[in-house]
Length: 511
Image (cartoon, rainbow, N blue to C red):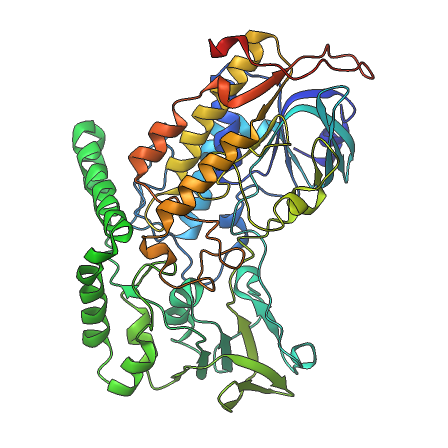
């Protein structure tokens, strides 16, 4: 939809406003319309939908979850490979969105600058680049891998050559025949290094922390197989189930660290068979237990590091001097191009600084010490606001579409209660949110997710794991499929601007 379309009706009240048109936002619109909620608007700041899979276009970009799990349950796809590429996932998202009419509801080029809860009218007022909007309900579908993290490297701004983040890959910069310095050795580097190694003259990789890397059982899914699976749905369910229970088995191990030796043995064997040089192997061997950071799978990364035009530096990059990158151990290398593969601000969503709740406090201030949300979906003090893939809902093994669909089942149930009861606002009780947060943090204490300590990948704030769900996927789905009205306070006000609302009261549906 054009910006002109976004401008039309910008002053009207919307029942549900979705922010973001990536995987979560597309799923939200489809779930809402299936629940009978037709008045839905999507605001997307980019000219195109796709979210993470639109923004990350680096060579070799793809999903580290089997493709049959990285799809909506209502839209099975004939994937090219066991693990889908970025381009194929993006095409799938856009094709699915168009098939369900989601594209007609997206207002592109509209960025949300701020949002504030109106306690008198029981609605959200949003400032956008296309004017002011009001909505009864807001669903945040902005994703966790959205804002690149740029390192603090003195002298980087003065580097005499191209510099770009892997999440904002500059396809106009030619890497063939040039010296490339890669800062960071996480999931993105693992994927793009084997691709750029083929043509670059030389690549220096600065590795701050060694990663556990498992072999990736990727393979082509021939068209004949898809024809067979289309004729035999039970066979497709069985194959998908095999992928699902493999992921769940890994999750079980991560929740019970005494079982970690099995996965660590596989990872060490993968390293030993891929890297003959013992010095390089030592540099690539993690100093923490498996699962303490994001699990990475690749069968091409280790071999790429052994190529004569690639050199690993097991040290952090700390400065840039003219055309040289300087490591913490004194390493100094010359480069023509610098690629920053330094991850994302997964624990600091930008919208939190501009979203004001009941008392005018921003979500960022509410989350100043740690990010808390009931079932990763509702935040006390922020009525009629729902988060998709919110705090402590993800893990290293559960596919995002599974989490999002479970959340949307919960959200549509909540909105169904809101509509049926005649109330106009619901707000999760602070004691329910606190009890859930305490249970999550206690359960995480004895898992591998906390093994790397407060500086680990999953710790958005010092000492607090704000990322991981500490139980099984089945438990997650079960919890999100059981909406309990008495977990919330409910209040009512006629939809008349300026009229005061009545005091919060328990929902009659709770009895």
